[in-house]
Image 1 (cartoon, helix red, strand yellow):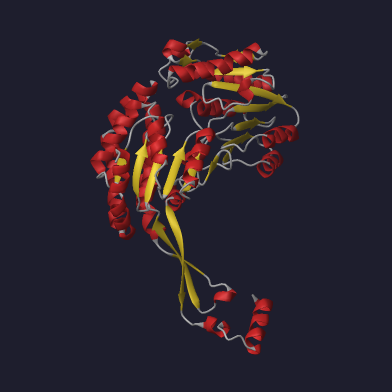
Image 2 (image 1 turned 60 degrees about the horizontal axis):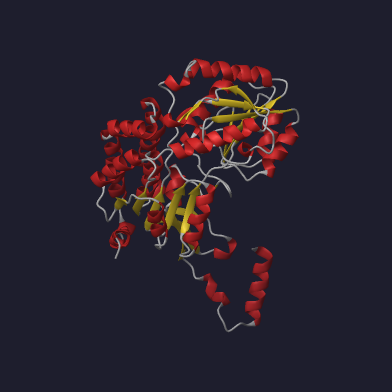
Length: 463
């Protein structure tokens, strides 16, 4: 028996016991997890530097703060979430009481990505614990420093039969996916999401898939260009563009394109300076392979006629690619069809908003969509004629931080959602319960008489 199978089997008895876990027991675990994160704060910051050369402030904002907020929100509201939810009886169910009872799904698997390894491992863990489950976490092998500190935190708070971390590369993930988990929570690319879903289907395991895609941004002629430039560039170049909900490309109205590009160029200089490679506010690409992949997108775009409007410098040995703005990109450039996931930002001129909407709708449904406009008709048109996992109007990426909103994709960008109450429900089974008060259904028991038929006909008219 492999260590993976042993870890899975060890959680069976605990998962059954946790069906009766109390509010106090779950809150105690969440509180201990939060406190352990704060106790290991310095190690988390160091791991961010070791894996990405990520600035400490960025680690706090993107790795630590979201998990602490998730934990505190669960501590405040878990009592309400766990309560059965009563429903009014339908006309067919007069004489009964109906309610939904939230139950743990059981043994769960969390497969987390490399771009925000602590956040996207421990954030879903808060939801899984709130719902009363056991968990195996498989962090990414591409961020070994973060994986190490995640394992330390989990080992300090939980016994292995409750929560355990299993590290390793793709074969480890494959072995885990062969097991009949009760729920799988995966964050990663659409391509791997399809693999996870296919594996889960063999056991009819439920899944939450938080994927990605090419999230479009629209800047119309009425937008506050200075604010839009600063906000979009912050959202794009945080973590050096390695963010699933980062703006992937921008459609800018022709009337304001030059002014917007100038505002972006000025914003880049003010944030990262004339030598961005020396900036202490810019992380690195995760490894040399991904550096090469992003550089290939840049080289292909330029070779096909794109113009570098800012940035463009590459130092592969340092895993450095400067925050780069691109214009005049031909439709057949690879950067227009592949998710960038790096510090390249295409800027596309438009004159007809309907054509932009048609282009967005012709592509797979994105994880996020952003519109910058002070024209309500334009906002309304975009929001009613497109779809995406989430959206922001005159802001970017903050939908992830809104604990009372579901975070997730749609179709190619994801299935299901997490965060807050929605994360609790993702790891819970909503059990439908009917309790009889007056047994009216006996009127329809056989033998079927003419009176029974009359009753049925009456119900057909009134239900």
